[in-house]
Image 1 (tube, one colour):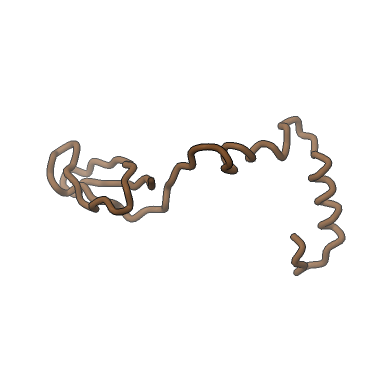
Image 2: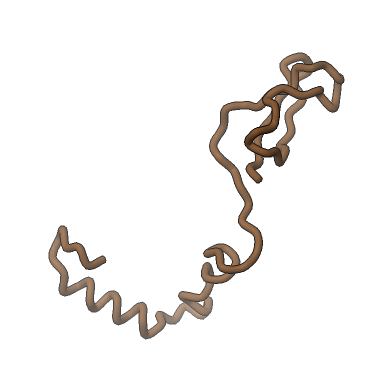
Length: 90
């Protein structure tokens, strides 16, 4: 489910809420209880859960954090050094 920014046009209260895409755009404000709590136009924000995502499983696997370059990274650097600008191999 996407996370949306909401803001009350009456009292200015702001909050991020997780809502279905099909949920109504206007809700009651948790602060002043007016029906002026609406979705703001903002950059998309979502949260990946479970396994198999880059952020949870692969983000730190390319480097152990010791500052050493892995063998596959050095092989890729050598391969890309052979390429010419505009190649389609990388």
